[in-house]
Length: 231
Image 1 (tube, rainbow, N blue to C red):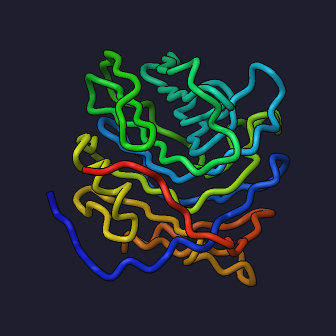
Image 2 (cartoon, helix red, strand yellow):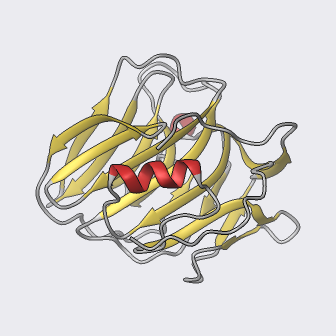
Image 3 (spheres, helix red, strand yellow):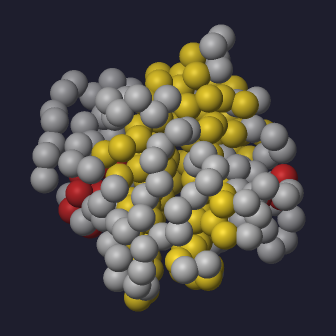
């Protein structure tokens, strides 16, 4: 486990998604066997009943996809393996709306886990490599066919790893958002490193996977993003 410790500047900016046509597109390479998706999200429920808002989505055409989604009371990780879509979700959660939460989904090739604010809320068996994707991953967009899957709300940052982080590593990242685990980090999009004048979000992972902004606003928060919990 590799940890870099630096002074912790406040998380005082966020990407605002309007729930209609706003998203960030990133050019990371396909992930095939192990993955962690991590995001700080402030969800404003705007989806019709039965629809999920996209946090991070890999869309292969309109049929197969790997995507991480939320509703006001549920978290869903959909995996496309061998052309079949498998749903792993936790429903019946207390309202997730109008508050900052730390969302994480992991897959290590045999187990899918979901975490909310540093606590494991779901574990399920799954085997196989993720189907390769033909389109670039998007942040805040969950479907190619309808805006009902678009995120309405804010995100302070999103990170993707090519490995499944442990519970200890996930809680470390939540409590030290500027000093994350570096092993396996392939994408780090942070609102404080987005330039709205150029429609670009610089990838802080060092891998050059800079994001292109579409109709995304960068807003300054009156209070820094904070999520509870202790190691």
